Length: 211
Image 1 (cartoon, rainbow, N blue to C red):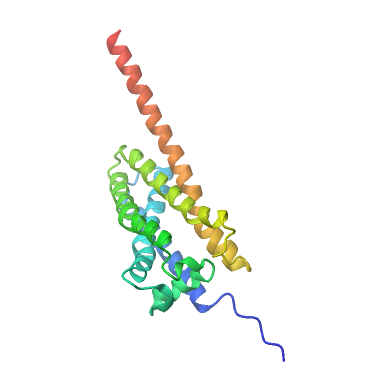
Image 2: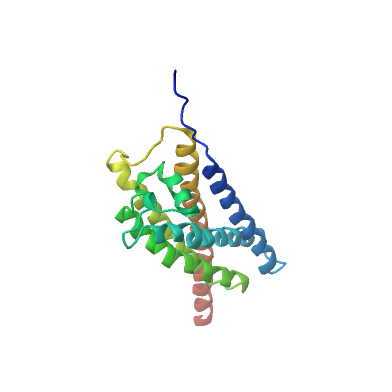
């Protein structure tokens, strides 16, 4: 008898992706309730992304951090969040055994990036242009986090990554990480334009007053 191949897309896979979808719905609802009615599409997208980002940092990544400090590990823990992270750790083994590099980055993500997201959300609600500085700070931190998550693997031949099937490679490793590259780059560029324009206008104003 030949054994049947292991199931790749499990109930945990389904519930994890449903959880991410629910976070997106909550973020979209928050934008509709909290942003001014005249907020433009760009600001609405930014709000939705940052709300999604904050919730993911505090809930999903916060649970990983709890399960990975003070001697705990995802692989030896129980509960729904442990099951979810074991599912992801099937694609990237480091998340299952409390890899010090990953845990260090997640400390910064949960305790640093999460609160910054919330502060920018408050600035968006108040239409405070100072948010563009903090968007650049946040985007830089998230791009650095993504780079330091995967660059060590690439340099060593990716011994901790399982890319043997479409779910692990294209959903968990690519899609679930590339959105934290593409969107921060766009936000950083957009905020750079706002900051550069403000600086140029201020310089012209100073020259006009001095003339």
